[in-house]
Structure formats: C-alpha cells, structure tokens
Image (tube, rainbow, N blue to C red; front, side, top):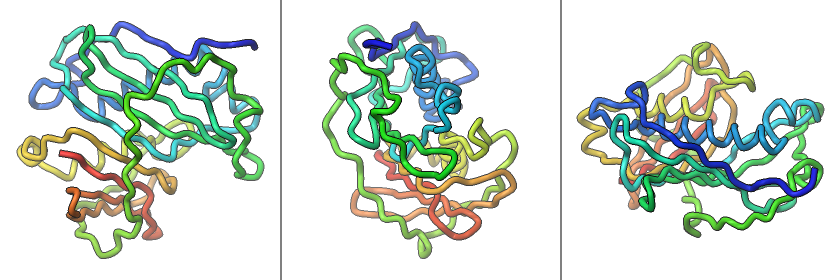
Length: 243
C-alpha cells in the first residue's frame, strides 16, 4: 500500500442532538465523535472493521482515556481530528482531539489490539498495520490509571439489562454505551456536582444483549471508581472518574 496518511481532520459542529441538559456536548457524545473520526480514518487507510474482517481478524480496545478541558456549546464550530502511533508487536495507539482554533477542548487516547476470529489469539500488527510517518505526538505522556478489577464489595448503584440498541457490529455492547449506562446511574444534579474532567477506562470482558449488568462504585484516594459486572459477576468495564 505504501505510506499512508497517519491523521484525519474534519470540520465538526456540536449539534443539538449531542447536548446534555446544560446544552453542552455530553461526555458520551464526545466519545461517539472520537469513535466516528477514528472510523473515517480507518476506512481511508485500509484498517476499518470490514477490512479486518476480510482478513479474519477484528479490533478490540483495551484501554481508553478521555480528558476534557471544556465541553463545547451547542452549535459551536470545531475541528475533529485523529491520528495513529507506531505500533508495537501486538497493540497500537490511536489519539483523537476536538479543537477550536488553537484551543484544545478534549482529547482521547486508546490502546487497540486485533484478535483472530478462528482462535481468539492476538494478531501481530506487522501483518496488517499501515506504514506511515507517525509524526504527530501524543497529547500527553501521562500513563493510564491503574484500576483494581475486583468490585465485588463495592456499592451497587444500578442494574441494567442490555438491549438491542446497545449492540454494535461486533455483536456485543458498544464501548461508549458502558459510559452511558454508568452516567445514567447519576442524576443531572449529581453529574453537575461531579464536574467530570476525565475518564480512564478499561474494557475487560464483552457483554451481550439480554445480559443484566450490575454497576458498582467505590471511593478511593484519587476519587471515584466505577465497575460494571457482567452476568457472571466478572468486571467487564472499569473506570476512574477525574473531577
């Protein structure tokens, strides 16, 4: 294929359908936007979901961090961008940002791997990942938060049965819908008081349509941590909330 463009940027408007009760772009909408621009770039560089499926492999995201400097107001005109980093043997990193001129409003960093459909093993990045200049740095070098995976003794704040509208092309709960489920356990007033500035997330197990999950929370020295336990009681999703 030769060297491909390592980045993608598009003009973006924060639409009313993306807004929360304060007419600001919601946290799930930010994550949806980053997922969308990532998909555009993946299609343009031959590493989209369908491209990988043709090779018998599929993407999984293991970690995702979101940092919010300012949530955009409804109808604000912005630039949405994504870029990829040089992979290691078995994983790679994708970064995304939302900017207005020189102002950085929010960014995300995620760690991806690819699994084989036939045996569930990790596919080597060298077998399909595009060659690029990889010349755009990460937004920061801050490591992902370490989150304990055992939420069995944490306070349950809600239960949710996964529905058809939560499922993505992989047949399991879409990553952003874990965040929707978690935030839906809090009132508008509680969310306003939390003033969330970031999330560090880990995706540990897949959840499926019809499965009832338990949402748990605990307080730590760093703030609040959330766990989503699947029907077997295993932590499928964990997040550290930064306020």
